[in-house]
Image 1 (cartoon, helix red, strand yellow):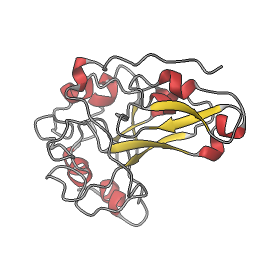
Image 2: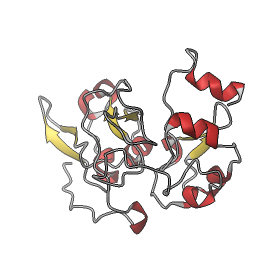
Image 3: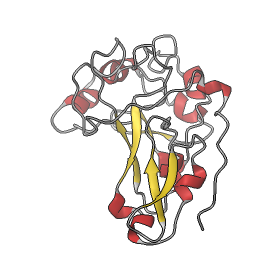
Length: 211
């Protein structure tokens, strides 16, 4: 492991980057990835970029992930691999990454009394619904069990209220987040993976306009 990659595990770099879908466990990933940039070039959504240590990271401000698998096909080092990717939910799904979406209510337009449902309109997996709280307009309500971490809400939100976080995994299989790893999302429900993301998104449920 070179110095720049080792810095990711030092006290100076404690953040957990969101790697491309089907990336192997972080500590193994930084050793396996050679920084070739092939996955970044292959991504049709242009959501991958090279960051610290010349390693790829997802940037949903550029678009959303369609789980097309092009990054997997482009990776020759094995850092992104279906074959070596172990399901982080112990065989319950084939989710490409152990992440879930969350959002900051204080930054949400609807929570501040301004009519907005753009996240709801852009979520193809019906993981966001609109509900009336103590406000005269509906506000977003997240269903993390339906969220696949595609990032459409992050890309579409005009206030950057949405963000992805790692889901802590207990007794994880090899190749996933280490058992007992502590993250800021402890206690969150894991996302529900689809049987095969490359087969396309599931049919979206009918939506009702609230405005």
